[in-house]
Length: 141
Length: 83
Image (cartoon, rainbow over all chains, first blue to last red):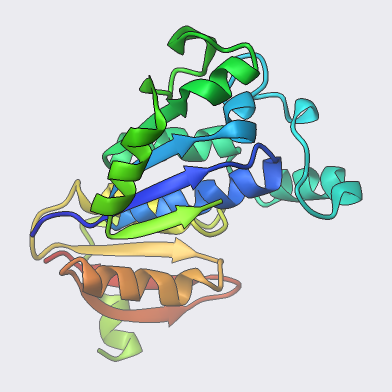
């Protein structure tokens, strides 16, 4: 049986939403789904090498004043960081991470090397639209 | 299976995922089941309440057999037979 596919438009660059995306991605990996992630505007900044692993440079989408409590709690519960979630999912299932070309430029990321190694390529919007039409599940985070 | 039957099973693989919260145990189970043969038994130790429902549902969906869960002190053991 062919694997089900998921297309995730990842807009958010906030640490809470990226963590949620990581948890969903883990579930998709356990289910052997093929996943295409399109890294849009704010998320492209989070994927930059000098930012991804530094939570002090990432915002919170909600309950912004509880960011430290959120991060401390994740650590206490032994929850992976959002980057670790994405990395592990890539090791388990077929996950492709595409950086939006415009988004990259906005945050001074012209080349693939400007982003963490998990990123596979830099693409235009047409690829995203095609992926949404072909995927079994579409998500926007 | 009864609790006694579950406890008496010979397991090919035991995964101790008590140190992780959801989705940790699920991914540990996913990775470990690839290392055993069809028909082999695997147990997953977890203290994460969500996992109690998550792993049986996942296992049945992926063609493995959920045999049952044994409660222990502060954690539980989920038994699966690989399909």
